[in-house]
Image (cartoon, helix red, strand yellow):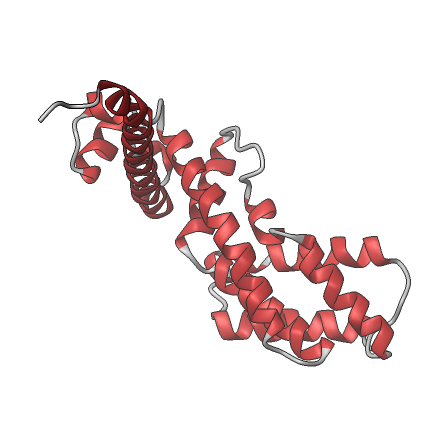
Length: 211
């Protein structure tokens, strides 16, 4: 049987592209796995306690291999936080959409944000920020806000429904975001329970914006 050299040449770019995509996909999955491990270590023990050698051991790879993925621990955590930010943003929007009226949506939004602040990702971001590491958009406040358009949409619907007071929209968004950011301190430094933190913040916000 005579092989068609032209057909082989035509097929080769497709094979090369598939292989490149497979390699890229594997590298991305490995990078996210390394980032998740780094975030867990940093949230537990602090940035200063996590070296590249320790991260390599926890990830089950050599230190030399680890450097093929990230140059330092901060970068590893940042990759994880960026990926989680996108997933969290979508999850919050979906959760809020399950509620019908603006007040219920705002309560759900607060619950989701406090739940994030109680988790390891927020602690990892806080540890990096406290260490003075350059985080770009991956600081705790950015993670807390995620996408202000979700909160802004809730306030808009509340205004139209006559549930919330109107005016000073930008100021209200800022104040609510700041109050939600304080949930980290309430839970991790003052040892207020997650449920009580949700209740306290919800009360303050609703008392301030209800008609």
